[in-house]
Length: 310
Ligand SMILES: Nc1ncnc2c1ncn2[C@@H]1O[C@H](COP(=O)(O)OP(=O)(O)OP(=O)(O)O)[C@@H](O)[C@H]1O
Image (cartoon, rainbow, N blue to C red):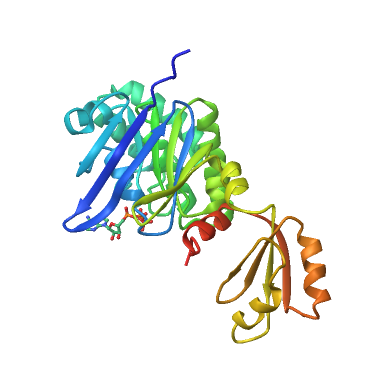
């Protein structure tokens, strides 16, 4: 059986801005139908990578192929088959919700009548049909984001690029966006997204790369990364003291690993409740105790020594 050619293929991909290297030689393969994520903190190089994939920023070095084409030479042909949802909302405030869709459709050369019926379908997809005639300004943040995503689908793209799709949204609005993206995934659309939210990466991504300082520090399915780089459970302890550091020594030997953060200590353990019992057996009384499953945040912390969201 021959392996299917990846839709996006990069080897040693580099983006420099003057002397500064924002993307430092990364390798990626995105397969058809998967949801692929770039997870990393601000400044990791996620958006710079997305802009190269979106053919709006040329690579400084390395190989990049999208849908089997070269973005340096075939940008317009690639862009015609991509949907792009940028980080900064760029809807047209002069136009209504519906007009934002129909006008965008016209840019792709879609005839007026088809554009109208496509817009109706996309309004339904974005759960915005009731707001079709409204101007963009009074929409909530979640509605604007769903409209931006709907607009990115106007040309029936094979790949949709989403740069931080839920940053700045409240939890309910984020869930609505996730649900729409999940629906798209079920329809077989390939999703490529950046995020600095570990829960978003865990919810949406089949596979992801963890980026830090322009490099990929780990790659895999969310669950596999957690299994590989963390323990099953984590105990979060807070001590009522200026410095958590004073208590870290007293916890030595409990669990596989300890991380001391400014406001809490994390114990990486197989069994959280058993570890908490050991803490109490040592006569220690933390002000708060939380036992939870390991997450991608723990993977990031283990790999970089830093938290994802500062
Ligand atoms: N046009 C530019 N000129 C100079 N430096 C840039 C430019 N664009 C990005 N950078 C720098 O490159 C680094 C990576 O930025 P990038 O936007 O790719 O990171 P990111 O992971 O997407 O983070 P964010 O979530 O903040 O967008 C940052 O240090 C940023 O300041």
